[in-house]
Length: 334
Image 1 (cartoon, rainbow, N blue to C red):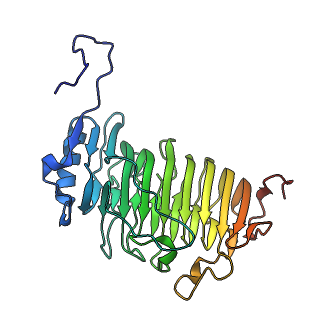
Image 2 (cartoon, one colour):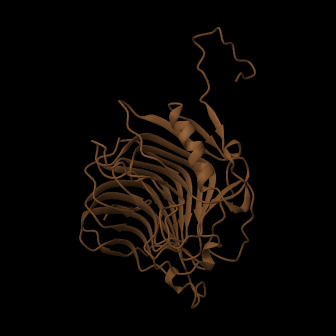
Image 3 (cartoon, helix red, strand yellow):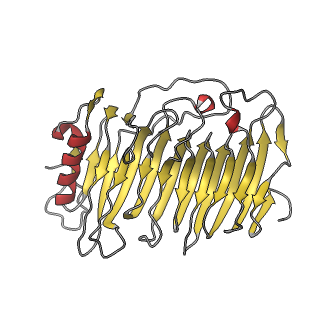
């Protein structure tokens, strides 16, 4: 297939990555049809071609995207791309409806894999990792309120880049029910991965853990609203780095459950203020900005806290976190 301006005789011109439209494989963006099978057919074609882009035009797609295991002498790139930047609907007050604009992939299942996941390769010589670099961008992922499944699980791919992605539970975050199933909005590639995990312009709302952070994670322009844990750091050999992280109305902005070294250049926090919670969402009142009871984190954080209905505040609380050095912007570390 040709493209405008492409000169097939110019061997120095970079060829475009092959694009596979899910509609050509039977997907229907009507918000009702289960597209899991169509998605799988499209992904098989992408992988058989040695990599490429799985493209989802604008619409609401019901079903799961399950990336099959893949082994070869080297890894390939699989892109899962929607029609454009999704609306980043999140906040700390009021009530805003969710519109069905852009590319939306949703699944309301009560069990099973994430809305987008990668199947572990049990035959892999590399710890169940598939030889894949997965790129997910320009789309929205939805589960149900109090989600029973994860949003995006990249645990078993070597590398990933997630950009311009919103993961939510289908309700404006201030109205979100307390998550009780331990689910995660995003899970990054597991320990001993391929050392390239990039998160850019990502919003996660309404989960037990917004982002489960494994080693080598590099994130910037993230907003984690109304989760029990904003970022959760698990055991890592290598360090992780974050630029700006917004964390609003989370029970714990940062939780550490395994030894992990990390840097957060700016952690911008908003805690619920007077008259900003009720019986349904009182779980969104912040208990600790850092929750590291085992003192497993080794880190540096520059932070700023705003209390709703009040303004900037010097309040900052932690449980443990003895080896995490924090500094309020403009002040000395402590």
